[in-house]
Length: 248
Ligand SMILES: Nc1ncnc2c1ncn2[C@@H]1O[C@H](COP(=O)(O)OP(=O)(O)OP(=O)(O)O)[C@@H](O)[C@H]1O
Image (cartoon, rainbow, N blue to C red; front, side, top):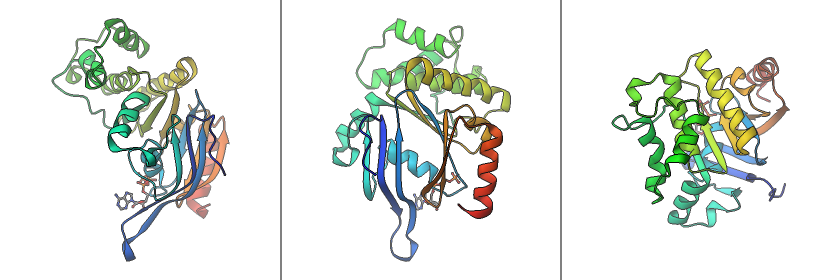
C-alpha cells in the first residue's frame, strides 16, 4: 500500500522491532493505516499487540525500522531531532492516562505552558476559548490538586489543544477515570474531532471508549487484522473476544 497523502497521518508497511539477537521482539509487522482530517479512530487489540508502539511511531516519538510514516505532511525519519521537536510541538498534541499536569501551576498556567515553551506568548482569549471548550471556564485558577480526575484530564486535553494541533494522540486517556467521568472526556474528544476538525487517534482497551470513535482498528501481533466503522460497544467487545480467542 502506498502512503495516502490526503491523510493527516499515514503509515505504510511500518515495521518496528525492539531488542536484538534472541531477544528481538517485532512490535509492528507491516502496518498500513491512514487517518483523515477530522476523524476519531480507536486503536484496539490484546495486550502486547503493538498499540502503544503504533501510537509512538505515528506521532514521531519513536523511529520506525522499516516502511514510512507521514505526519502532517512530513516524514519523521528524514528529519533532524530539532525539526522533529518543532513538528511535534506545532502539529501534534498528546494525552496520556496519567494527566501529567504540573502541580504548582493553575489550570490556566498548565494550558499556557506549551505556548510558552514554543516561545509564543499566550493570548488570553485563546486560553479562555479552550478552557470554555473543555467546560472549565470557572476553574482556570484552580491547582490540579483542587480538581477532580476528570477535570484534570480535561485540563490535559485543553493543554494539548491550545496549540491547535492537526492531530491529537491519546493513549488510554480514560484509563484512570471512572465510567461516568470517562464518558464526559470521550464526548469532549468526539466533539473536538467533529467541530474543530482535528484528527484523534486513541489507544484504548475499553469497548465503551471505542464506541465514541467513528472507526475502530484492531491490532494483533503487530498487524492490523480488522476495522469497524461506527463501532458500538457490543461490536467492539465481540471483535476483541474473537481476537483474544483466535489471535486473528
Ligand atoms: N521498549 C521496549 N523494549 C522491548 N520490547 C518492547 C518495548 N516496548 C514494547 N515492547 C514489546 O513490543 C510489543 C508491543 O508492545 P506495546 O506496548 O506496543 O503493546 P500494547 O498493545 O500497547 O500493549 P498493552 O495493551 O499491554 O499496553 C510487546 O511484545 C512489548 O513487550
